[in-house]
Amino acid sequence: MLSTIIDALHENHGAAQYQRLLTLTFLQGPLTREAAAARHNLSYSTFRRRLPQALALVREELWARELHGKNSS
Image (cartoon, rainbow, N blue to C red; front, side, top):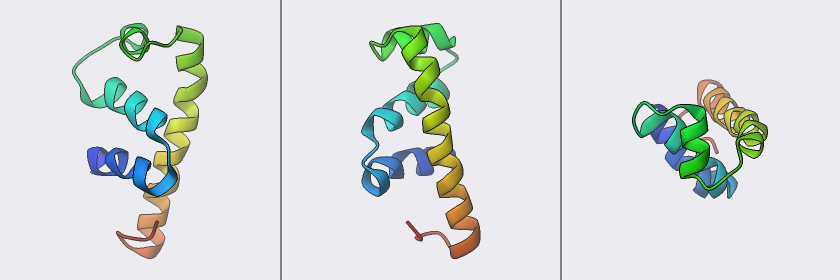
């Protein structure tokens, strides 16, 4: 389900940067966050600042699906 939510971020929220960040962090192997930041060509501080924003989008999508059904966005 997480990969489906992450894939939907770009089309539902125009959040391609967050989609890539979440994919590299959670779906593409066991990376440290420092390594994920480097693979995303971000400084670690920028990565740390964007990650909570990306996770908030995932939370919003999960809540929308819980309250309104699968295709609510």
